[in-house]
Length: 586
Figure (cartoon, rainbow, N blue to C red):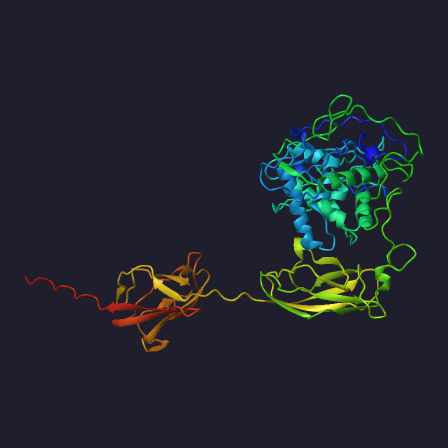
């Protein structure tokens, strides 16, 4: 690997390396209005060639990491604490970009726990693909300040991909271009797009969205990235090139030895030894100079060597991400095991699938299930089988979901043969639904789990009181001028959404409905003396409908009750009209 440290990388070439290509001049002001939309403006569907890498064979140049690693041996692989962390400039990652990588790692730890994706891998790919979003030239929400675009994929030294998005993402209505800090071809973005910052958009020009989408792609096919073979296959699926693989692995190792945060926009960009400028994919036209000389066909030394004669060769991630390519020659093989060629795969060894624990789970609407379905995979001899892909699928009339809103999740069994489904969130729909577990690639009997979503408990109030203290009076045949307003509390806090029942009762000791005295009116204007459809507002208050008096004078009682034990009795006084003075005698 040391012999590689003085070289620059050129991605996406085939067996014949291609000379430098001028970048398209697309400034931020020229970006199409649809650039940040969630779906392309066109429904063209020209699919990438089967050997196209995730970015179509772009032309970003990057130096390999320096020999002097950031930090001493044994330094933590995570970010040193504090904004004043020191280290080599190349070890600095722009703050927003670094945050996006770490958020993607955290999200995937929930949705793809078997993958074990390290954020440093995203950082290594981001370094090679776009120089960490052109040195961190992003806003606070993670949007790139200028479009980061690859060259036109027109077959002239790169893959030939006719426009698939109507220019919505890349501004090109003739051919596709790789887009954003993680360099997705538009059609590939449609498969893996993600909302990494929770703003409701899935934008390839946003580092949060792009990093999560890249992580989902790298984790596809039930990969475990802590296994060297899976790690290498994932990187090769991004760009099927041995030189690309070596370069990404070099940066991965470099970042694992230590990194530090730098302000956005101050990240180090590659430096071309010929003219001091790096060929970054920014919105402005950039022509990298000092390009490597073409390599004779068939030498196998350039990017993509050994993968055929077509330009931009590599596996098409949208076609089959689970098989992005074999481990490159010259790379140390992984330890032979039951899933190596010539032996049974874990799925083939699986003989039985069974539940490991309970098969019924309950949660409240809007909450989370405390436990997750878990299965056990054994071989025919009864021994547990590790690394078996188990697929969990939610079915039934429910809006319960796995992390990231998924209705399916694939998890690998551990060394004990068990695999638990990711955390399951209950939706708002109540009732029963099924979570079915199956072994991927093996026709074994499925295991069904029953999950029940119960209604939320009704909001409660343990106390209720009037908001005013003006006596409530009316004359017979009239109406009460002062409205009745109350406030419900629970544990001293305002209780919103609490159901309140208002009843005109016979006496303090007799809570049955009175048949005379004050009353409310229903929708038809008829007298009613009980209201059971009242509910407190967000601040816990409630203003009762207007109260009327019949022809009966006296003192009457209105009783209000709430779920949770809150009770309030209010006096209503009804008097006869005052006698009118008699006419003066003449």
